Image 1 (cartoon, one colour):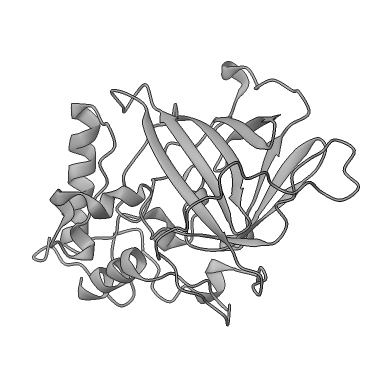
Image 2 (spheres, rainbow, N blue to C red):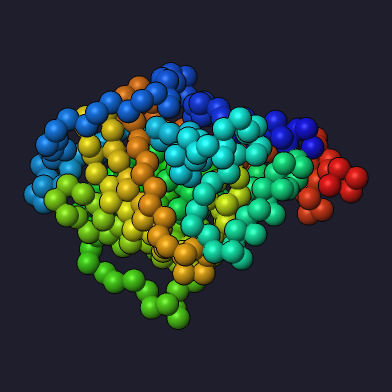
Length: 280
């Protein structure tokens, strides 16, 4: 139990420098103000005037989905294993989340990624590992270091797959379009057995996300996420995240299974922190 609590605390509160990256600058420092009327540079030789987001970017905020959770008075003075999100859950899903939080406080693993399962969308856009944006005429690829995952956002004018033909996946189905230098992304079809972050805040497989992503300064990209979940929420949840340019970083190979020293076994125990019935 103590081992898992230590892992959870580290995951939430650490500065989250990416694995194998040697030059980690200070994360979580106050964001510099965006220059007024800033216009992102345009790709060289781009006939479509697409913006230039080249380079490696790392989440600015700490490892909770909504960075304002750390500022909530309800979280003040709590240990990392007790910090929680405040999504607009209905009563049924609030109770489900409360059950997960109780398990966290008891040292019982609740985060599926502890077993090397992908975090999926929308979580992957807030996981504290670097990413690259590859902007093409017909799509935007987001190359994530974590588990070497790739997110594809199609900007070729296609429509979403009909709901009765759509199989939920970890990344979901992302369809985007450009409004000036802002990428507007509509994502559906996300798996319902993933969670928002290490606190295991859950969502249903009906979760729907709209993102407005743009470069707001020479060194930052902003992602305004509006999340709807007709099964779990009473109203939309708006979360704003920023990503810092890391000029000296590069994406490394990340294979979770190669370094998983503390896997969760089917009975809920781990190799180093066994949770007994008495401890529950």
